[in-house]
Image (cartoon, rainbow over the protein chains, first blue to last red):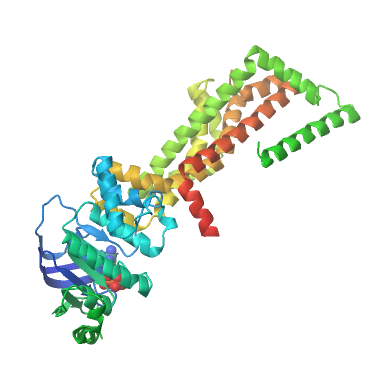
Length: 243
Length: 256
Ligand SMILES: Nc1ncnc2c1ncn2[C@@H]1O[C@H](COP(=O)(O)OP(=O)(O)OP(=O)(O)O)[C@@H](O)[C@H]1O
Ligand SMILES: [Mg+2]
């Protein structure tokens, strides 16, 4: 559903030209779970933001097959919740802003909060939630307007490993239930290998795509995946490419 | 009634008693320092004719209308300067110049332009309230994470929706703090305006008392100003708590 051809980006800061992303070719199929991994500063966020429409590419063409009025779902590294709104109101926020009737927005918000495992926390303000819970609210918010494409920029990077593992499993459940196309940026080799159909490895700054792995791992993923030798082989390959 | 209120009341009663004792012990002449009882009599006399009510109302109207106008203008300018930094850079020298001048000094020219009615005082109060609110709003907006801008673009929010649903709530707490700080100055501005020329208001009453050598009237007006200032401060604080509950508790948590 996404075709990028020679997509590149440079920034002009105080006259100096900063190369953020060297030309990238990438295809993402509908319903795929694709991870992007690479060293810090290689342009992962830049690529994701170009796909989201938050930046415009300096070169190349990007085609996204979806209705023009479809907004992409985006999950930031921090939850970026509105601190004065309850969990439910935060999830409903995109719908409210688009003028969706209140009861409809309410029903959607409650359904999605249950999907991310937050039933009972509908009325809680963000400050009363843990980092992991906040990130779940943020995911529910991104799903609220039912985007075909969900872009995630190191969504679990700030969380402890246990929470991260649990949220990874939840994300796979949500992905299976909603049939979204997901592009997932991460620093973690394990996360990329565990979650994805394809893993895109980027080279150091200024980055471009170094290698693309199609995962040999079966679905559904779970504890057994982590015992699979192919999983460890994939992680070893990714580590070697990143080194 | 709360314990704090009871304590406050006790203090006020003790002060009144001390005042009465001083008047009796030192035999202060009534035209310089009338006793609380004499002031109370003056008070009820003024209140009885409806004069006091009219003076209080006009000062109150000036303070409220001016604060509201200044706060709205300050909020909008703070927002505008954050959204259009070029505008902020162009206008900031002018604003700084205006801000460093004692605002009271503008009063005579306002009176010349706008007459002796409410208008010049309202404008003076608005100018006084404007700066702290604008500075607060601008600072509040400058501290907002850039991701919220991305969120607004991602959700394709209109400028108005973004202002109402994101920028305004972020700007409101520091803007309110600015307003709270400005509330004392706003009272001062209204009274100074009235002292310089007015036909109504507590400042006018102060002048009247002075001209008639009537310390009782002067003290009655001062007491009314104290009560009004206190009520105003409390009003802003209550509004803050009502509208910004999330923020106050967040601050409390951050400090804990
Ligand atoms: N708005 C900008 N203005 C100027 N330079 C930028 C801007 N955004 C990104 N860059 C530069 O582009 C390069 C790539 O940045 P990007 O944020 O995409 O990296 P990243 O791979 O996401 O890194 P990290 O893993 O640390 O998040 C960096 O060198 C960065 O300094
Ligand atoms: Mg990044």
